Image 1 (cartoon, rainbow, N blue to C red):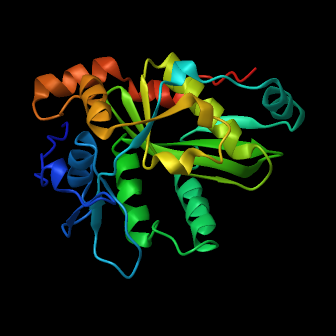
Image 2: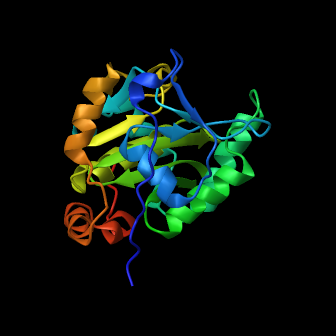
Length: 244
């Protein structure tokens, strides 16, 4: 039997603080998180804080079909023997992303957040892209897919270019799967990645208009069927990822 999603209410987006904080509290049940993402809202908080919901402006948006891979990166991908997979090690990717944040200023990928996104993964909404080298997980990323948009959550790298390789794999996958938007949390956080020139920091209201063209609200059975026709979850797991 298919799951009938619940739609949760949030404050209007123009109620957000200048930093983007919109609401405090609630829980991290899958339907609440999906309701948030459909409105351009996401949870982000540290372990000693209550659950915080954010909708910052501007946002970074990428059209996956527009990404260009440099010759040097293509060469490195080949020479380093990287192999790209999808949804093979979702839990491990999230744990590795959390380690990176712990080594900086603490992590927002708490145990509660890991459990919530793992539940979304089991329902087919959260996905990972992994980079392997000699059988070892050396890079990857994960995020949420709804309709024709993918919301990037976090990424990590253990060797040079491994996270970039995962991003290349993701952009290829999204393009072949006809996913037209890759949305990041904050525009300024894209600056360290090779795809920065392909991202646009745009006004959030414009982002939301673009997002609304790509997302279905998942409220009725008819809409759910439309979503499935736009985005075949099984193809995400099995589609090959050419990178050269």
